[in-house]
Image (cartoon, rainbow, N blue to C red; front, side):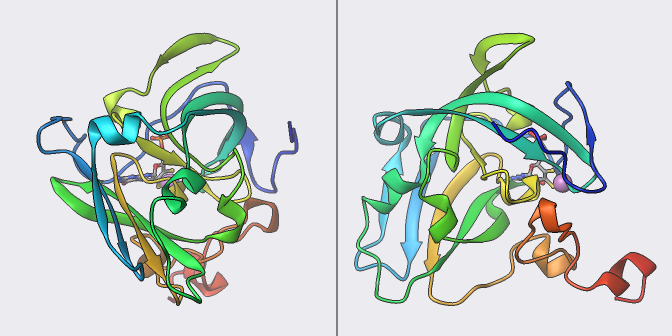
Length: 205
Ligand SMILES: Nc1nc2c(c(=O)[nH]1)N[C@H]1C(S)=C(S)[C@@H](COP(=O)(O)O)O[C@H]1N2
Ligand SMILES: [Mo]
């Protein structure tokens, strides 16, 4: 696996918890996962339908914009591409917004991403994890139970919506929750793309 520490990051073996708002409390009856936007037909999947999708296991690195990086966490989940197989996207769809709960609003959190880098095993909606210090266990409520997105390591971790609630397919890139607040649209840790405008860090944004 890529063992390279991106610029300005430090390595931690712990898995810190970071989010806005309350921890979502899972209820199977009201939970669903929506595939919508520029698609021929929008669909809504139940928890059981999502959990019956093919599973993928992948080991990846997490890089948080607050400067911690955690290497080599192994995740079990559903690859982003499995959801892409369930809808017919319109021509020229190149981006998605992945949504998650924020304070009871199921579409309150979001992050935008290009589709092309999300087709591998390392773009996963996860529900289980392990690492060298921990055996297989469920993703805890604080980390996004019952399902949270983990982006490829070429994106900062804010692109990984916890308490994931759906994917919107888009022809044009559109800023998500943090991107609307000055963070980078592209968010590559290896290029240290933290903010959209470097003046932001000096408070001039
Ligand atoms: N729904 C939701 N997902 C979210 C957030 C959030 O506030 N709400 N915060 C993001 C940010 S900024 C980070 S760094 C990661 C942190 O994930 P972790 O707490 O599992 O380390 O979750 C991301 N996903
Ligand atoms: Mo973050």
